[in-house]
Length: 40
Image (cartoon, rainbow, N blue to C red; front, side, top):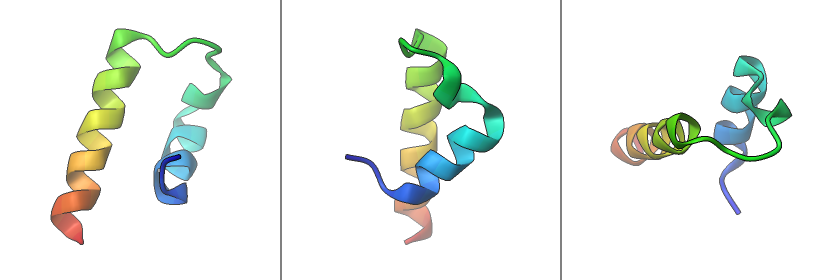
């Protein structure tokens, strides 16, 4: 379960429409998670 801010960002990018996350998307998730961790 990821924080909703991440979900909203992905929705804006349209990544939530992809059934199976690609490696690129997985890296994006990790990048976003790192950004949120640094911010808070």
